[in-house]
Image 1 (cartoon, rainbow, N blue to C red):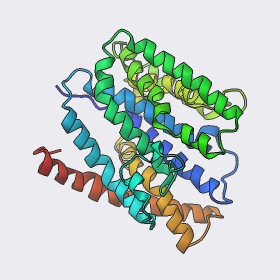
Image 2 (image 1 turned 90 degrees about the horizontal axis):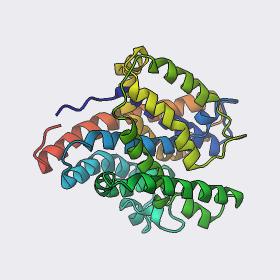
Image 3 (image 1 turned 30 degrees about the vertical axis):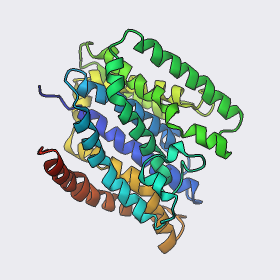
Length: 330
């Protein structure tokens, strides 16, 4: 069975990774581009999009075929871990506690979620969700799966609101809860459920216009004024975007599926996982990002290194590992 690739999603991976990069560059320096749309300025919002889209696309790929759990785990490990290991090496810190990060369990450890490579809490959470995915894929066939997804999303919605009332941006206990993998089962399974609910809807050209209109809405959505800023609300706000992109077979999806956008999406993982260690090195050897020129130089360094890791690690080394340990060419 040939699985159709939905390449129109790729550019949004790149935009998300770039937004996270910009967010961290401004948080850890005095630099700012000034007034830009909230979703582009607050990169953390895109992490919820990554979890939602992962649940959606994994379900799309594996819903109608037998999942070999062993091969699934190995291919995901071969794909994600080598670049992540490089990111730990680039931090130039080799204390005993790095073992938590090497095992990708830092988000489970009190006061360790943001250690070494602070962006990698996402990968720690994703590793847990990928471990659960084969079981969740079977569970989605149960009539209670829908109720399960709705209940845990409502729970997380109210729980995150409670955290923000306590000022969730400070305190090690709140940090531990905020980045704990259990808090993101909701968003991931919401993506899985979303695929099941829309998979049989007929695709039409008209969705190109819906997609464009909704992207404009997302760029100017008043999260900071009227919408509660938590994982459930942000995930819900991305749902129409994923739906319209999936159902669109018109001019806009074809435009988004061009080779340049596909390539930019393909390097988004390297950009995301390497930008923090590279920022630390940039600050150490060049200095703090203060001007637009500093930011452009920093971005170009990240972009260049990400291209190298994409080619040599995510492509070549990944192919070598699959051929050697799975007897499988990719």
